[in-house]
Image 1: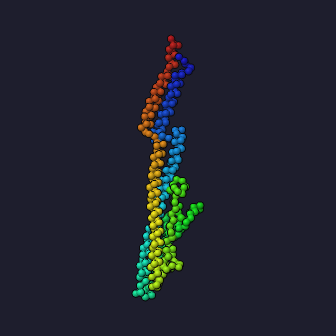
Image 2 (image 1 turned 120 degrees about the vertical axis):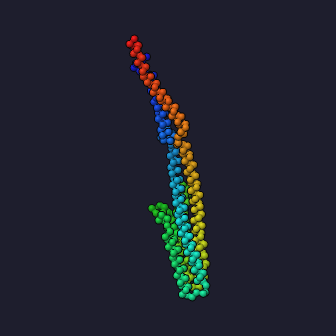
Image 3 (image 1 turned 90 degrees about the vertical axis):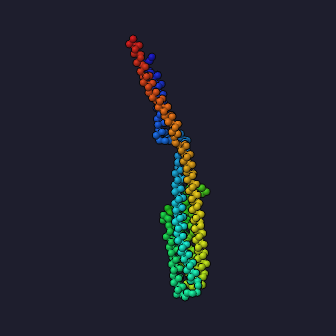
Length: 294
């Protein structure tokens, strides 16, 4: 028996320290729900998890970006639907002015409404915007995009991926000009047959011009519809991708509660046992006093 050094108590204390550290780790994991709470738990797993988390956040924002773009396209398509009504009325007026049963005064009255419809088409094209971005006045009709300045110009770049690869992470929205002059109708249209219906001959020519304007407008709407369908498919794909990444991140990061609870109970028992044994080991030197006293 030794009095100065109690190696038995030292050994038990070391075991207690180890068991308590393990108990602390399992308690932390169960309380946070995470298997990896610091780099010490799994350095490689932590790095992979953080990369996945940034990609998941970017993809979720990408879904919101794509949905915003869908709303933008729906706004433009709704305005084009109103323009369609105006073109239909202009075709009706041109048909009315093309017949010979009206005199010049009456035909000028018809012409007045024809020009009013053209002006309204231009007003709608200039007034239609989404978040301050004009959609139908030609601002988005350019073949080039420049986002280097505070305000981007040209066709609109819709970004939805987590990187900047043109094949995977973005594409462009390009919307043709839908003013009356661009469609070739109204007195602002230069060199077209749809400028006026003030005479019978002009009205007859305007019938073809208005038909061409309707075709031009329908091409823009068809393009918008195709883009909307593509964006909806993009949203579906991004949602699935983010969901799969979250599942992968969970497998790396989240704790298995059943397994960890088993470890917790084991470490708790070992810690309690070590505390009891340390108390016994600390009392061993007292037995030497019996020998001295004897």
